[in-house]
Length: 268
Ligand code: DGL
Image (tube, rainbow, N blue to C red; front, side):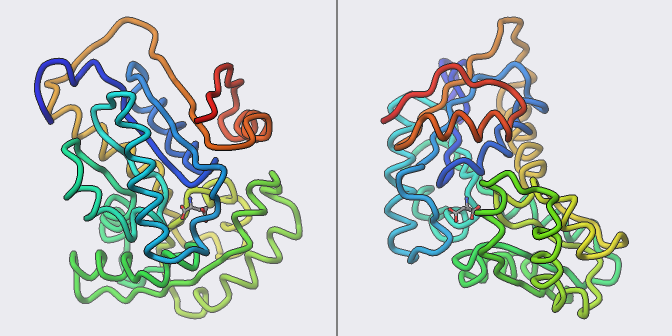
C-alpha cells in the first residue's frame, strides 16, 4: 500500500448486491475506526448465474466506482467475483485487492481434521473450481466436495433465515455433502452466513461452518496492521453506501442484515 494519504482513506467493498453487507458488518466489528465505502451492484444482481466474462466486466466497473472515492483498498466481498476477477483486478489497478476465497480456504485447512471439506456457493463460484484449487494449493491431500445452492440467495434476501422451508431446502442441498462425511463446510457466498442456523440443522452439529465474511475481515485487519503500523483513530468512522438500483429496497433489507439503519444511500 502506498504511504501517506492512503491510510486515512476508506476501505472500499463491493458486492453484486446486498450480501456483501455481511462483510461490512464484520469489518465494522473488527475495525471499528475505519471508514468504509460499500458499493452494491443491485441493478445487476445476481452474479452467481452469470458468465465469467460478465462477472469480470462488472467487477472492473465496480472497482472503478470505488476508486472514484479514493479508497485505499478494494475488498471483493462477492465470492463469484472473487472466483473469476481477482487476477484481472490486481493486474489493472494499483490498490491492494482482497478477495474472499483465500481467507475461507485457509481457515478450512486449519480446521479440518479428517481432510474432507465441503463448499457451498453460487453456480458461478462452483463452476470456477476456485475453492477446490485454492484448498488443494494449501494441501493436496484434502478432499473437497462443492455444491451449488442457487435457492439460498433469494431465501436470504427474503429474510427467511430460519423458516422450516429454508431448513428443508438446506437438507435437500446438503444431503450429498453429509454423506461424504465432511467435518468443515465453507459458506462460499455472501448471503449464506444469514442462513447459518438452518445450515447447521441441515448439516449436523459436528460440522464446523466457515463464515468467509469473518475470515476476509481478519485478512483485511492483518493487512492494515502490517501496512499502517497500528493506526489509531479517535474520530467517528464514516460509512457510505452506494448502489446501482432500488435504494428503498436496499434500505429495508440492509436494516435487517446490518441490524442498524442506513441513513445515506447514494444511487450511482
Ligand atoms: N454475492 C454473490 C456471491 O457471493 C451472491 C449473490 C449473487 O449471485 O450475486 O457469490
